[in-house]
Image 1: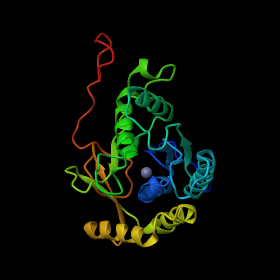
Image 2: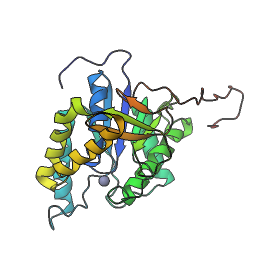
Image 3: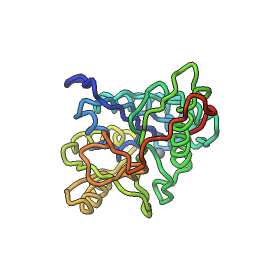
Image 4: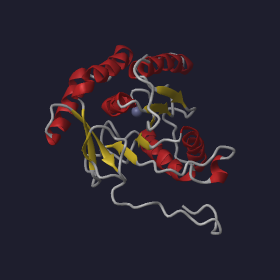
Length: 259
Ligand SMILES: [Zn+2]
């Protein structure tokens, strides 16, 4: 990637989603961090190998093609990319699943996390999405606990959560003006569309425009802000917790593993 190296005060945003292409609605959030000189790590739990976009070919071949697409997306956005080895359509929120994600969080040490939420509407309600949200949110807590992540150091710094906005969400919303990042948004969309015929450009434009109307800009992305004030922001990080106050750190003599 080009551009200045991350500043010493640079933040790290972890974007953890179920399938390659899930990030299409998060490109402005990602690009706005990169524009600040921050680090973004984009993690997919599966390779999306269950897609039928290729017809009946070997799942291993599908996975290889999606690996290649993901690498192109990573280069375009200037982010680090990772895959975990969950099975497409088989992501289940178990303790072991959250432990593996907790170890990743302890390694990456994010200042914020963007993932799936609890949305249950057509297009968003894939069981892998719901399970991914659960796994990642649980993992942020487990990553604080030494016995869950050793030999890695626990990650106890605040890592507020944002998720794809649910249609009927009662949570505050954080929105990002997408106009400066339209080329990147459609660049990512095109990489996927060439092979998967998704996402449709018209659909994506309409989505960005509809969200923008709510925020007084032409195009926008919008997320549920679980732990921050929300509002129209330049980037998700840095973020102030929404009046939550400092986390109650235990004294050295108190019982371990409190959270
Ligand atoms: Zn998906």
